[in-house]
Image 1: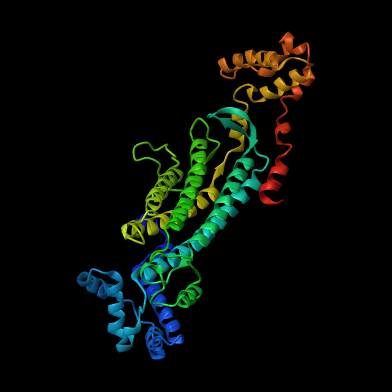
Image 2: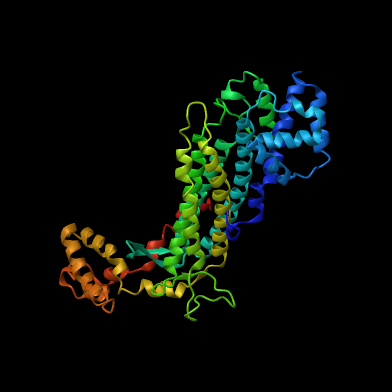
Amino acid sequence: MVPRYARPEMTAIWEPENKFRIWFEIEAHATQKLADLGVVPESAAKALWDWWNTNPEIDVEAIDAIEAVTKHDVIAFLTWVADNVGEEARFMHQGMTSSDVLDSCLAVQLTQATDILLADMDALLAAIETRAQEHKFTPTIGRSHGIHAEPVTFGMKLAQAYAEFARCKDRLAAARAEIATCAISGAVGTFANIDPSVEAYVAEKLGLTPEPVSTQVIPRDRHAMYFAVLGVIASSIERLAVEIRHLQRTEVLEAEEYFSPGQKGSSAMPHKRNPVLTENLTGLARMVRGAVTPAMENVALWHERDISHSSVERFIGPDATVTLDFALARLTGVIEKLVVYPERMQKNLDRMGGLVHSQRVLLALTQAGISREDAYAIVQRNAMKVWESDGTLSLMELLKADEDVTAKLSDSEIEERFNLDYHFKHIDRIFERVFGR
């Protein structure tokens, strides 16, 4: 993870101290249940919890020093605990394997991370809804292929983004449930040396559910789905970011990122106000999506298990969640402070001499008895004159002067087809669908 694009709460989840605390809880809860079953002495579990309740500091350097010799991180941790707890620590890890600790810990970390991401999503959705309601009826031009199409409202643009991120939140909640599984099943997942009730007990204590079948590892299709969802969310972030970047272009300038006092846009050109935050979001989205393919490739492990997935997850677990957390927070800030220019939106709507109303005239001519093909040709030949004049000509005036049009439509009927409000008659219904009101 890069500190520049990281926030403390999310970063803390992936710090060694948090990981080792989760490892201890897994081991101690398992030992407690084994004691309840009579497999190990009650004194073993008590010794672990008594030591833990003194709030010992996790000595990461000491654990790393042991690992330098053992070349095994879980054994290094168990050795460090034993050095501190004493003789009773020999009953730790009874019937367990390293993956029981590692995979269950990763599940806890990912659920912790997801809870932060879900809160991030709530903040973003609230910001988008506020601005959408503010600009519910602010007219602007809709574009297809980057070309003027028909009128929409800026609020409707934001309502679309809200609906998309609401879907993303639902997917993320499902991904959390998918990833929140616990495995304490021992070597190759047979429970040969540990009772399944231990897994159920540890899962309950950790807020997880038992993995139905773990082959020493939790199946990586779960992780693949999880990181795929993060990738989709990143793509939705980029989609909204790209829209803002386009709207800030000098030739468009319908909205722009807030430019704070003292901010500089260019080391060479003092006039520049660049969409640096949304450009940054595009880059961050690429990084989050970069975790998806490795997560997919982690699904195919050899037989019951191998560790080819391990190194990958040490990267993508922290990097994807930390980066997405930062990106969601940054996008929320962009939306909250987004500067919107309704006058420029109206100017751009009027930019091409009324061409945006061509479909309404086409439909009126067909309803007046002209074939669709002929009506299209009539409207298009007038529209092309306006297009080639760069909007200096008026489509309405050209239609009023076209005998093929006036033979079917009066001037007032033509004028009515250029009524901007016509396009917004169902905005309330769209908002009710999206926001429930």
